[in-house]
Length: 378
Length: 253
Image (cartoon, rainbow over all chains, first blue to last red):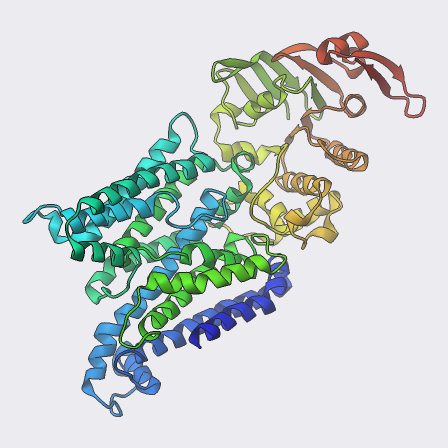
């Protein structure tokens, strides 16, 4: 039921807005419609967030959830706690569900941001945040730390899986960067190929570790980690994630000129005064940093980074000035709903969120491919 | 603006593609590069517009040392219409032409009314005003090339490089594009494959063979049967076309 609702929201949005907004992209008179859709996204995010904190094992009425949020956000100036049925609601919402919604929002924004940037960097609509070996590197790091560990008592072991995943992601993406720069410029094709090769290498090492591991519990947690989960979200993990993702978003929102010229390819970009190989490296390092952080906290959540930028290109066109804000917001919204579904779809069971995103994402993507006229932003 | 390229040498791997080529384009001159496929025309042009650094030689646009100046500074004065313009993502024609303003913009600067006016003018010159809300990928080859030309015009360059700009285009598009460029009255260096068009539009020609300047001069000096036979390995006779009064060519193997 809820799947169909969210799909209808996104799809009718596209149907209604698609053609109009695309032509509006170049036409200043139609610009208002764009801002309207952006405002709509923001509104939906706020409502969805409140809905998200109100549901779960303990059902909290929407109104009470809202007044708890209002009360705590305005420091008690607005909203009242008088009608709250149970004191525990306060704790559930503020300590458990709030951080989780914000995690979902941030990670959705981060994934779709990295997806959009990566698609521009490698000039390939199939790219996602994980394309350049980041996923396999992170998996290897996580597998290593779960099944082998960094040794007891060492400083490293305290950080555990998150640290392993982050280090794995960073090392692989730097290796991809180095490999693709050997013998001249790092072109998009070389980047993709290096990513695929190093990804395969990392995967085989992970398999090797798993094959020789005699640890059923460990293997299970590797699997669970690889499917992505927001279960570990908490306030004390928030600062790093928030700073990394929000800084990344803020930066890339203002990179639309470079991102646009990236779509034209190296040759044309140079004649427009932008040396892409420099920006490509810079963007790769930044996205690796953001993706590494996200993977460390939430595991591998697939499909969001691939599909959200595409939906937004269908809505707003490929001009990154319009694309980026829309992508960030829709990514966050998508993730909040995926999280809601992962918690509520099966009673008393929390599904890994990566499964949900792919299950919602694939039909949406098929719909876009089948529907005539979608040509990556036109 | 005057373009002076001196003693350019370009190697790709171990192969010498361009050997000691010097080219001079005077202010407002339309200069053509002719020569068979693979003779090094495109490579030479690439090294002039900084896409491919040459091993040796200098390129100056007036007093600006192109090879040592930043891409951004160069692109404010030098516009390029390239050979291939395929992409995987789509923009509208208007957005595409607006990208021509990139060299004149700081990173955070937004598009001003002035930029919109410049883009509009470029669209008008290339007969694309009715196309501005169309998607670029939906256009035909000739229309795409006109969009690229419009983008380069919006760049407001003082010198333009064209690399076989009329490749694959029908006659009308060929004439439209070159007439439009000629009307800009700025210095132009263009690699051309059609000799009649080269004879008609160019003030001066460089014939390139095996990476070297084979000969250069006014079109009527360069486009002789002997030069053409040697350049393209074909038998050739030239004649004055009775309709256009321009040079005509008859080829055979």
